[in-house]
Image (cartoon, rainbow, N blue to C red; front, side, top):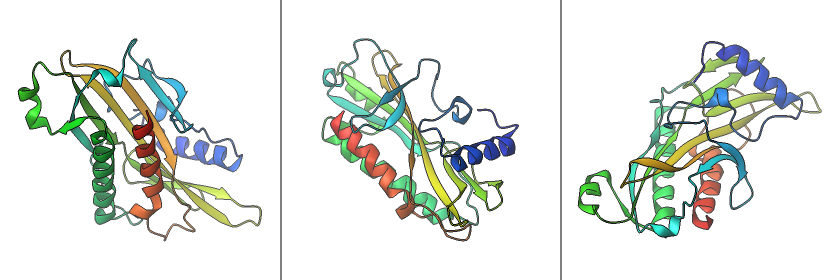
Amino acid sequence: MKRSSHAVTGLLLAALVLGGCASKVTQPDEYSGFLSSYSQLREAKSPTGQPVMRWMAPGFNLDSYNHLVVQSIDFYPAPSPSEQINAPALEQLRAYTAQQVTSAFSKRFVVHGPADLAALQGERVLILRSAITGVDTKAEGLKPYEIIPIALVTAAATTASGARDRTTELFIEAELLDASTGKPVMQVVRKGYGKELENREEQVTLNTLKGVIDGIVRDIERF
């Protein structure tokens, strides 16, 4: 991921928000480096119609698999708390994401932890790697301060009355690998919009972003 001009990128992103033209999908300079490759991603729609960046291997069919090993549902890179999002909130966000995503997949697969992979040889197994890929905020006046490089963006947006609202965005990256080959069969990069914040003092909590996770879960269940 490119980080050398982070402040400039933040200003450009905020300008897009102000103009009502913010991209609905994750842009290449927002990729975290978590996935094994990004070169084949293309814009697509989720089952509920949300814009995503996605790639699927030719002929890939979820129904061909019976088991899912959850290798990771975590932050990438490791987060650092800030004045706007504290350590308990980060942990609540991670735990809720892991719980809800695992529960959604369990409706379709027998779900396992990484320690079970060796015992599943000969079975049709998928491996899930996923991450919340970072947190970034932009204080009033469009002067950004960093929490972690991407993922949660709090961008200033001027309302018609002249007041300044702050939108929140959550970024997720995930890939499914065929356990028999170790190669990816599906990759998804997605961002979603959480609740607006009134100012830089308002804390980001699980409730701010819960709707984004719930939307992702609905798509997993319908895919």
